[in-house]
Image 1 (spheres, helix red, strand yellow):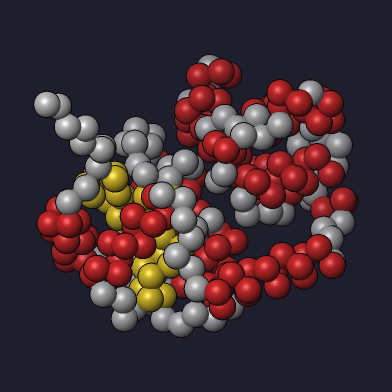
Image 2: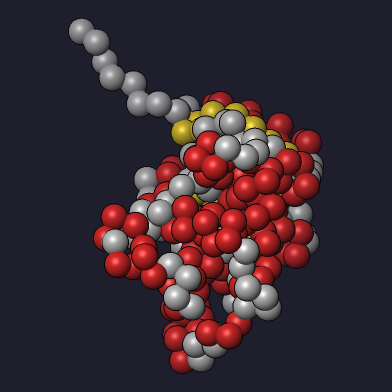
Length: 238
């Protein structure tokens, strides 16, 4: 009789602490069903990577430096756009956690969490369940409500997008990742990333999803709105 064995959850660890990475690698190997396939701690190195590894969950170490953690989250989400992102070492469940969520994190693990608790969060996030506390969920909803109360002005862009940037924004809205866009346009992955960052800077947003939303509001993606097939899909998260 042949038993079906589910594929292991592939994990990337983003931390500058080698001991920390090694300990987590041993922990996941002993837990069963978890496999560390990549790790790094340098956001610049993450941005330079081609993202060839297929990653399900990315663990980002705050390193007691929230600003660095935000940079790591954005870099990791840019490299592994389809992976679930989890922030490790969060000190308190306060409004600072919302900043991590806005940067692209899907969940967090407190400093005093147990190894078993970390493994449980990884499994829950991979299963598309939210392990976040009601307090954090409430804070996120309050932040969303405040943004709805004070909408972003349409004249937000610092300068108009170039034709190439508009073309790439349309492909992002269709749910294409960096590698798919580079193949479609016959340019390098790094060139795609450079254009995406140019788009985010011009529109003064932090995430692709925000850029797509603002693109619709500014009338840059009118054809996509008129074409249901162009509605962003699940791969648009980034």
